[in-house]
Image (cartoon, rainbow, N blue to C red; front, side):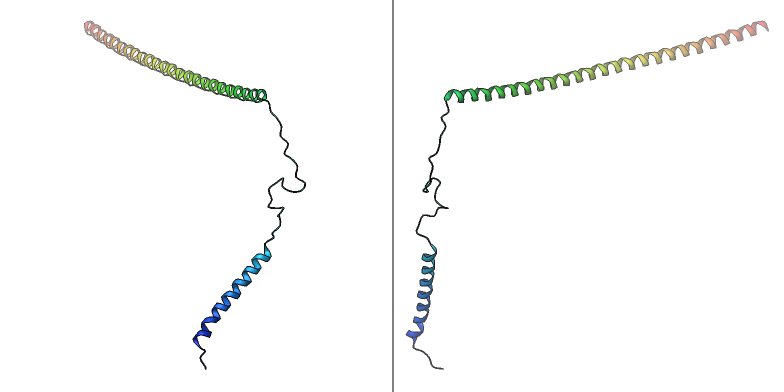
Length: 145
């Protein structure tokens, strides 16, 4: 195998590099159009461009709409406040009803305890009277004999 001179071997990569760069540049320039691209052009810059039509809106109309929006928001806020007041009233009524029910139950409990105490006293009184009656009966029997 014969060796090539060092200068010839070092020049070959440079030649390949220049050829490759040249081909890339030719492809880039061939693919790029230098005319106006209609797809990328801003609207209204073509040949059939129409002027933009604007509608003039009076300040009175704007103020009327603003007042309508404010009135709607005020109605919505008032409705929310009324609903909140109604909920609060229902909560208060439920709390009051619960307290009244608890008080009624406490009164019933006291009444039941009083009735039980009275019944116990009545039973004790009956026992005492029965015991007295038996004692008198025993005394009378003892006297008779």
